[in-house]
Length: 123
Image (cartoon, rainbow, N blue to C red; front, side):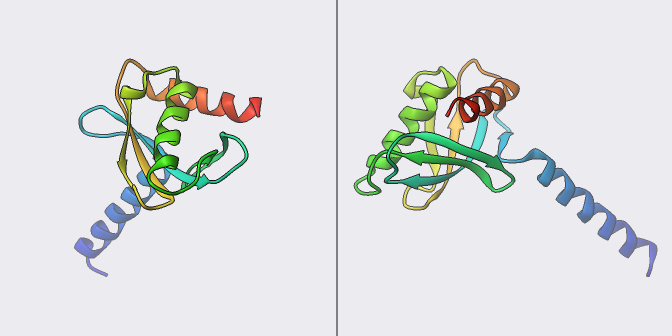
């Protein structure tokens, strides 16, 4: 294997490791917090079920029709994080269970992680 081929494969491995370490809660280029969410609409109550490399599992007490679950998800996440509803927006995944939330406002990445973990422990 040539030196160029080795350096390319090593560079790709580093990129993969970096993405896995970031997890579902990251910062974008605009310094907004981005949360990957695995939504489960139609649940009995709103709850965060877990955090893994795929996303933050969130049960939503609203049907997945006419955007009701999306609205409830934004409202619930804003209350969990102690933010206004206008600080939390659904960025992607309007018709999918895999959603991306964008968080603006005065909260840090560590505070978001801590509040989400605290919510899991309280349920």
